[in-house]
Length: 364
Image (cartoon, rainbow, N blue to C red; front, side, top):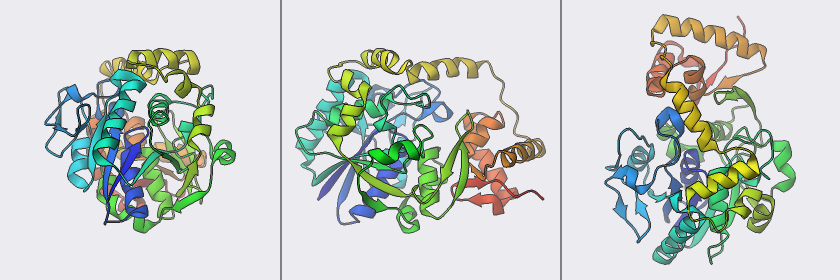
């Protein structure tokens, strides 16, 4: 049997989809994970999501859908984690191309459903910002989730909406989400994380990294993103909740107003009206700013000294863990230096590595 899992926001949601497949359906079923190629600026210096035209080596699945094999490559200067993800996991990763708006995404889904006749379709969002109204001051990335939600509501096949790790994306808090969530369908365990453990060593997703960490029993407060947002790591972290799809659409103002869009530009325009911003504008502005910044040289002793200062300040804020993505930003390193930073810290202070997070040590 084939299971179709739609990674609502792309990025780490695709890794979480692989965890979900292993946990709920096991090895006897095949999984096709439909996801955006949208990895943010640490991986991809080009703002916004990638389309099929931004890759070489994609494979045709249907007229509008292409899969991303391990041999595919993004066209420079773009970057993408999807080929490496395809190399490390046994699933088929199909590319969601949002440049034809919601109508285009819905068409891709309809073609894929007709081609695969899947046993089930799950729409998975890590964190729960897919349930945002659009006016929340903490909301950062509503566009991709609204697109997939609106498209899934147009497909003439039952789709189950699942929210994993409520609050772990640092956008809506667990307290805000709790009244909106349905029953728990699964609680991730360390065993469920095992199939993606190697991927988590290099994948930059913070929300899915925290999802895996909480499944392994990590508790505390994790500081994430360039803004240094605190995220509680609690017993709620590894839970997966079912949510009524129609109720989610009724709540998500952006998803409703973009239902008839045929271009990504239209979706962006509606996002500016409903939410007050477009996250792609944020990426455009940040990309321009990053071009003018000279990254810090990765000098081991200088980095460790600066890390010590950060850890002391973070500890005073009540922070117990952080991510390598956040450390890369804090230490003024470029995205390409993230892997080198990780190797340095694991070599010098392996006792602080709580996979896939970095533990802030107690004061000595």
